[in-house]
Image 1 (cartoon, one colour):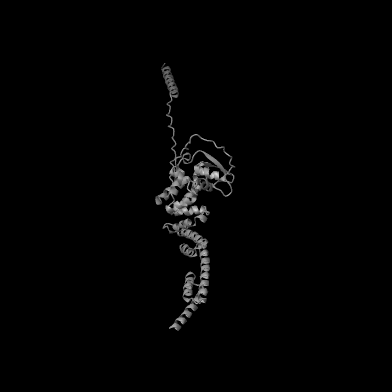
Image 2: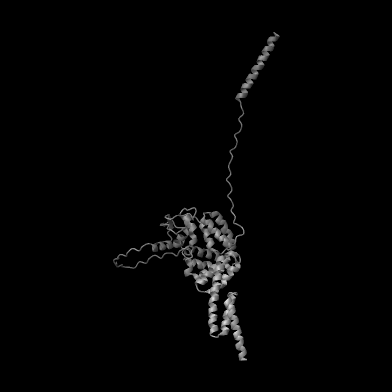
Length: 364
């Protein structure tokens, strides 16, 4: 009987354990779901301008960046440029091309042209918009990401500004005029007066020569030199303006010796082509002094010195033969000032001085 009780007790204990185990498997505790991970957007990269650039170097970099379609970095360089040259309307215009929505910058109406050999967005901007630096806005208008990547035969939309329409009309063949019958009108109807365009539009319609003059007035010599370099045909009709740009650029304190020498060399060649040799001699000498490694300036200066010295030597020799000794000696002094090692001038000047001394002794 005691054994039965022990067995019964063990059986009940096992039953309770089985029931408890079964309940444990049914009543599982659910773990809380992990909260979704919210991905944070990367912070926009803060672009900074390159340090140590002169305004001229920074201006060229801005144009290079815009031609490559790197507007954000170009904008950073523009901000740095304007800290040094806040009055620069040219550079402010480039900033406006970057920041202004293109539908506000240009009208939606347009006409198309086909890009021909030798043309670019810059030449089209100058031809139709009157501003060579409008190339970036024109690229945006045509959804061209890299302005320099254009091809011959590409169709380009030109915004239908008044100036662009006038330039486009001038390129088309004029149709023969038809005879219009004269209609008598009972009363005169006044034509509506068009409102004057805003100042920004007037600026955009300035001719390239007027833009160049405005740059000089604002002392934007680097921009003026850059414009002349991109459009050398400007020089023929605006030689004095080009000379002012070159000389003004060279005289700026922050112009490097290499850039100054290049501008002085350009001015010197322009003086030579205008038959202003004495002025050419002066600026070419300055160019060599600023950058002795400028081979173009060195060669041009050497040729000019030789030509001037030989010409003055012939003039002095003619005066010597006419026994105008004082005049001859004065001219030979000029020859030796230009070219100290001019052998003929040294010999003949010495003879003129000796002859003059003899004549003076005879007159005493």
